[in-house]
Length: 210
Image 1 (tube, rainbow, N blue to C red):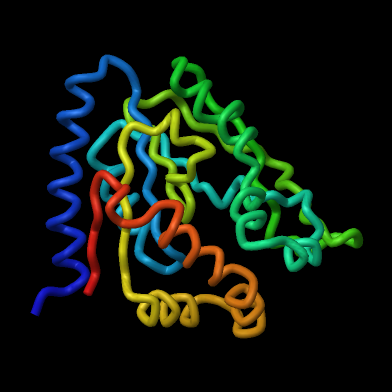
Image 2 (cartoon, rainbow, N blue to C red):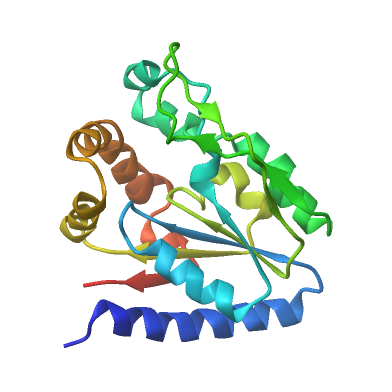
């Protein structure tokens, strides 16, 4: 029986070959979007890719729109949630564009650990993160292949895993009450995004878990 480990190993070899070909053709850094639903296994694949190349690994979750009050999300439509979930402008200007120009990228992540502030927003971490210029700029996270930054992305990867398997992984690592609220708020957004905005056929490469 083929396992997830087998799938990742096979897929990673193919992805590495394709990225090597792309790097050979483009005399500049390439931007790779590693997308997939929550709990799909993106982080595992990201670590494999990062080990094969000179890589600037950018966790998309760092750019969650912390300035939007928590309760406000439930007033948004599915389309609005997808549009505003991340600060795309900050990702673009503070990270991707500098790295493409050969300059270091510096940013502050949203501070989930400190919890919500009195106004319902999240703060930002006091210590900044930095990535040096690299040949591969790897943006890892759900919605990383969004139209908002599509003009900057050279190669898109979808990690596709069954919903029940993804949810089981989330249940093993997240607080039950938090996860219940998260599903209520974001499941419909993921379904809309992967069904209508970025369906499987729109990606350059799909890693399929059965």
